[in-house]
Image (cartoon, rainbow, N blue to C red; front, side, top):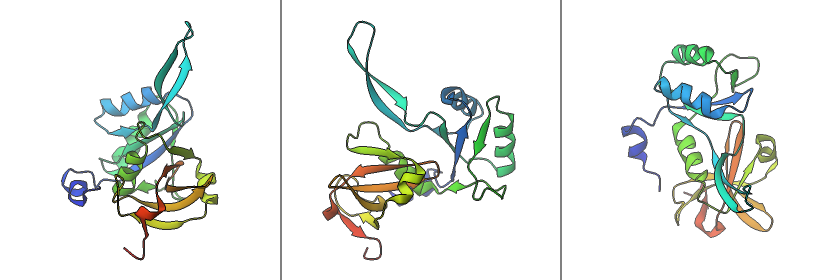
Length: 187
């Protein structure tokens, strides 16, 4: 369940930016942000592979190789300066391609997205922003179960129901029972 007080008291009410990288150096960019005291998030998932000896191994790897999320903990002009000084080329997702304003992801949306991206959850699918836009669904609130308090779109895929959460740059779908969900206008 999402705690409303924790969102504002712990300072997590600050929005986030979605940043596209022109390379797959997410760890290096993350270290740069960490050195400057900024919080970042990279969606990860477990990937199984065979090592040189033929044994199955499991490793955490980024879901998208060129996407990182950064918490806006400084004024926008300082954030722009830090992002511009980074030695790696990147592009902050904007509201509109013609406007210079960065798209700010609300803190609650980002927190829900991070919960849904937990690599230990098995029944999860990642989608591109374009694929997510094609999914028809009803805005819902999860009222019961371990995902109580999450919001998103209830969509159907492969005869199963999923909670879809869209963020600029990507989307995640988490398997959910439709009986646990209530349409947003019914709350």
